[in-house]
Length: 273
Image (cartoon, rainbow, N blue to C red; front, side):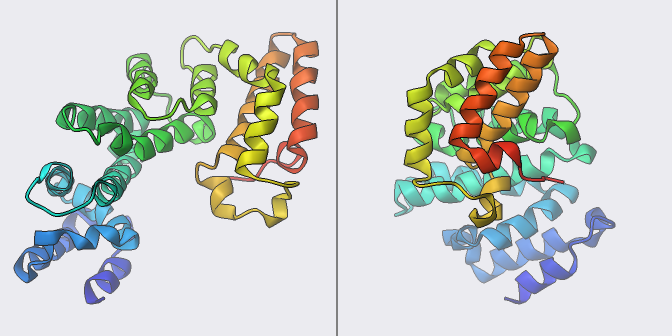
């Protein structure tokens, strides 16, 4: 509890690197034996608070060590679910911090995921480990692209290729990434998704049965990688792209479909700023 309060009190951006907060916390974790079983990785708030200090103080290697032990330590009696939860959270936090402008923005975030691919390429947990950070970077590269520096084509393409390793197709995410490609945006995947009306309806009903009301939806889901709001954002970007290309009829078709299936979200998209 004391360490958690210390992290919260020291959490301003200014002076992170010189605070030695991470060094003290890591030292305490080691001296107390808490780093033996790594149970503190189950505390998302603790991990989220500590990660910025680790990176600012040049202790990112400690986070990688914890992640590697979680994934690879065969002597530990952790279930696969526990390993995936802990390791993916730690990796997602590294990616989140690296995505900030002072650390390299989306290029750095994507590079961190690629680093994880190389480090854990032989692990059967790789696909599940990458899912959360991959979706996080995909959200930043599409829904929140307006607030980010465009990544290089090479890294963007590598990020798209990572999707082939994941345990699910992530059709919405991949369609949006293709649409937001930095050098050659591709409408085709988005149009295929929206033209399959039955599939869209089934997906919406499965993920959110009943009529969707914007005011009743959890704000975290609107801002935190939810597939339903992601469909709405993909729809907006698809319509805008079609309109710029002069394909007004196709734009009207997508608009009509989404106004029917996601009336509140599509006509009143959540404000992310």
